[in-house]
Image (cartoon, rainbow, N blue to C red; front, side, top):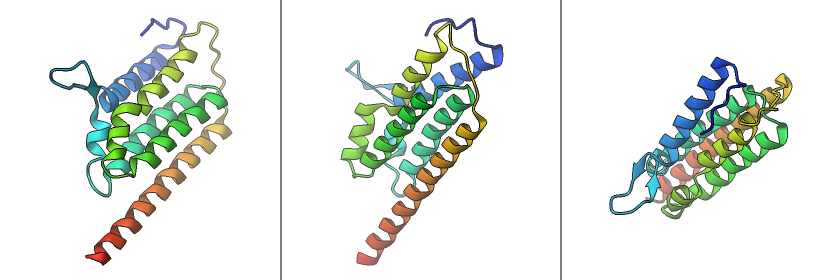
Length: 160
């Protein structure tokens, strides 16, 4: 984590908070006897019905904050695709949670964020309409995902 002296103090605090959240979600706990780390995201994902949705909401927060920092559109779309892939694969019981442990979408998104904010030539231009579009896209992804989970749970309950 480099010093990003060219950022405003509030921007720097925001970036540091996002780094801490990503670490908590992807790498907070060292697996005893190994150097491997896992975070709360795969653990939260084990909760049937809502765990993956909660993880997706927390991941979406990172992307939304990155959008408010003025990251380029292409980078924001990469960040959204990281979340989408994580969510889709995460729906597969057990294998999805193992994928969460390996993929670390939030850590990858923070690396994308850092690539831009650590560049002294970073010139954040906030495109309010694109931020709104990203927020809407994230909301629709989460709502769709939650609806699919609800339908699947209803179907499974109906089978028993």
